[in-house]
Image (spheres, rainbow, N blue to C red):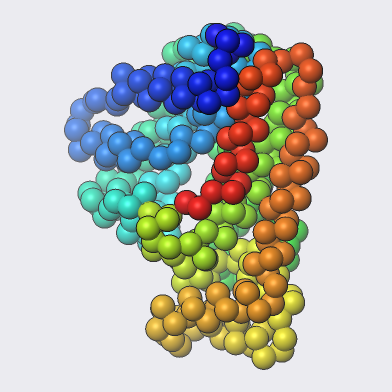
Length: 333
C-alpha cells in the first residue's frame, strides 16, 4: 500500500485510519462519571504525534497498517493519561484551548479517570497481541511509563533546586518526553516485524528527535502566543521550571542579569506575573540562551538523521517520517 503512495498520501491515510480506530474504540463503561472525562480529553484531538510515529515506523517494514492500530491507540491512551495528571500537577487550566479535565470535572475525577486509562493501555495490548510480540510491546510500554514518571518527578524537583546543569536537564527530558516518542517508534518496528538491530536504530532516532521536540516545546512556551499554542504562554516561567533556556541564561548572564533572574524565580509575590514573563524573556534574549537552545535543537535533528538510514525499508514511509519530524521541530504550535 505505502509503496503506491507519496508521503502526503501515506500520512493522510494513517491519520484517517487512526482517527477512525480511535472513534470505534471509545471507552464506554460504568460508572459514566469515570469514563466521561476520558472521552472528553480524547475528544480534544491534537497532533497524535506518537501514534503516527508508531504507524509510520510499522510502515517501514509492513504494508498492513491495521496491525499497528491497537498499539498506536494504547500509546495515545497512555499519553493522554499523562496529560490529565500533568495538568493537575502544573495547575494548568487549559489543555489544547479547552478547560483541562480537572477544571471541567474535578481533581478526583481527573486522577481516577487517568488511572483507569493507564490500566486500559495494557488491557488493549493484551487483547490484540500474543506471544513474543506482546511481551516486547509490554516491555517497551512499561519501560517508557517508568521513564516518563521519573522524568516528571525530576522536572518537579528542579522547580525548587537552584543548581541544575544542562546534563541534568537533558536527562529529565529524555525521560519525560523522548522516551515515549522513542518507544512509539520501536513499538511500530515490533508490530512491523523489524530486525532487532533496526528496532534499536529507530529507537535511538526517537530519543534524539524527542529531546529536540521538548526543547522546541520549551521555546514555544516561552515565546509563543496563546493563539499559537492553545494555552497561556509563559507557564514554565511562572512555575519556575528549569528549562534549557533558564539554565543557559543563568550560565551566560552578567552578574546583574543572574541576580535578577534568581530573584524573579525565587519569590512568586515579587512581581506581577505578566511582568515576570516579560523580564525573563528579555534575559533569555540578552544572554543568547534562546539562540543556544535553537542551535541545540538543530544539532539534535542532525544527530537523529544519522540513526535513520535504512536501505531495505519502504522509502515512502521513511520519507514521511522525515517530513513529520521536520514539521514538528519547526512548528509554531
